[in-house]
Every structure is written in C-alpha cells, then in structure tokens.
Length: 248
Image (cartoon, rainbow, N blue to C red):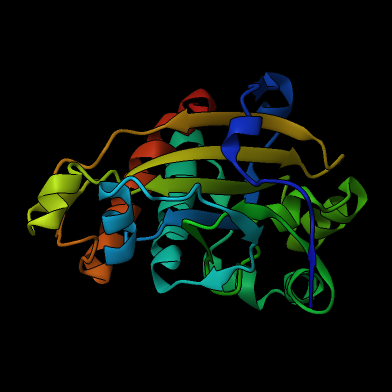
C-alpha cells in the first residue's frame, strides 16, 4: 500500500558536499544498498502537438512506486565497479547482497505494506534494480537500522545512489518530421554512510554530459531498448564525476 509523502525526490536538494576523509580512510568494504533512476518518459504524440500549438499544460507530480527495470541491474553493477576502482574498497557483489537474509528482510520492510513514497514529476518513471531498494527507502531509514544492516552485511559502510535522466530531445520540429534525436544525460547523487554510526561520511552530486550518439525519435517514439542502453551510458558518465572525491 502507498502513502504519499510531500517530498520531491530530486538531487537538487543535495547540493552540499560532504567528504569526511578520516572516516572514509577506515572503509575497506562497502555495500551499495540502494539505487534508482528517475528516467524521463519519451514524449508522446499528444505532448508534441500540444507543445506545438502552445496548449501544453505544466507537468504534474504524483507519488512514485518503484518499477523494477532490467537495465537498472547493469547500472547498479557499473556504479559498484566505479566505486571499487576509485577507492580500492571491496563492494559486496549484487548476487550476495540479494541473497543476504538480513537484506532480504530490509527489502520487504521497504517494499511491502504501507509505505511513504516520494512525489516526483509525472514525466518521469522511477526505476529500481531488481531486488534492491531505491534511494528514498534508504534516505528514510533511521541511522540505528542502517547500523544493523551494515553489521549484518559485515561491511564498514553502506552506500546509495540516485540518478535523474533527461532525454534531451534535440528539436521539436525535427521530431515532428521523424528526424528528432534523444541524447540522454544524467544527474546523480552518491551517499556513503558510516557503518558504525549510520551517519553520512560522503555526499556529492554531479551532472554528466549528454551521450555522444543519440537515438532517433519520431513524435517522441523511439526504441526503448536503445534508450535504456543510452540511459546506462549517461549514468555511467555521471558516476565518473560523482566519485572523483573518493579517489584513493
């Protein structure tokens, strides 16, 4: 069941940077316990015509349930790999995270029954990796519970990441005649929490560039599999930026 929480889950509210060098130096093993992507929906024919005739209404917002997306697993693994490469930390493999009994219990806590959920722009879908909670779930977990999760996973810290992907349609007119191009870009925020205290020891946000080669669209209709592939490419470039201050 769903309970709406009057909070827009966007990275614009996460502009302050936190880099606690001493605490980060103590981390050897980490678990990426939450990840999601707010992915812009392809523009529909009706949307384009409304915009062309200047009758478009402002986008609304609604409580967002996470939808599992297969492409999120690739994004999850890429994010974990980049964290490992930047830091030398050992990141708990996704398969091990999902089969951990304590994490399975936490996943059920955050996905079953009555839940507070964020209100996001209805032009975006909220995708989560299969078997992994989204960032809002971690954000609303008390430090004491996060400490328990870290202890159960036998890690020094837990992390979570959130992405917002814009499709960046290059031309409304070109889309109307079948020559539009989506060139996705991603903004992201990454958080690392001390497993001993549950407190943030790293927080950073970054906006990545548009992908170099996009996907053609006609009236906003494009190949969704290709868009998901480009989404993963865009989130990877944003992750490169947001992990810079974690370098060894």
